[in-house]
Length: 312
Image 1 (cartoon, rainbow, N blue to C red):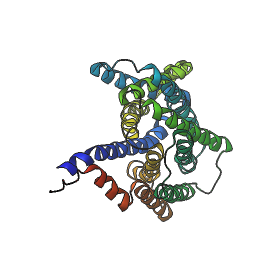
Image 2: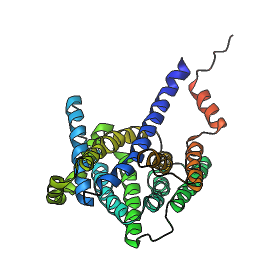
Image 3: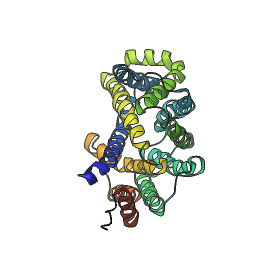
């Protein structure tokens, strides 16, 4: 019973991370659909507005109030960089290059998060994390090369995806300290608000394009806001408060493998053998990076369990 109680927070954090990865993977399929009718900025604003509405309702019902002043620096930075800038340039980048190239370049992000987390937050860099990230990155490269369609990638698209990776990494590292001062819902809701405000210059585009966009594209935009944004960013923040930025970032290396599977099931894009191998490497690297050495687990349990009293 005691072991089950101790392991419950870790199990919940793992489940939250899994939900995040699954929903973020589905976002790539939805962006591809919605991006055919919406420009990058309009799609980002529509997504953030939908997410903010969902988050705002929950925030109001729970009556969590405003975040404390100490959390606002991290909220503002993560809102501008991750919720705002990242979504615009990612949407733009995916219109310039194929999905494989975009996944390859954006997956520089977890490496940057681990390095920035170690440098700025003092996060540890255990050998298993580094080894797992190396395996997963090799898998992401394999997936990207297998889906590149023989080249022809736009230099602008590659640069945009690289900027998205840098913004993603910087936003995560900025968000981590804020989660120590405010609740998960507060950080996510007001980060989304900051991103939406930053995207307000695209309001005119959104109104014009929504008037002519097909219904499936608009529904995909709303889906992006409610699930990959409102739900997934909240579960991400919940899990991030219970582990290091580097370990959470390594989990997202499962996204390319899931994108391949979803594209196969939803879009009918049959993956090749090399793509499947890359996806397997992504998942294997995540498993390695999130594992713990046996000695560390034993030491942690021994430190928590009460020692038997000596009999006089």
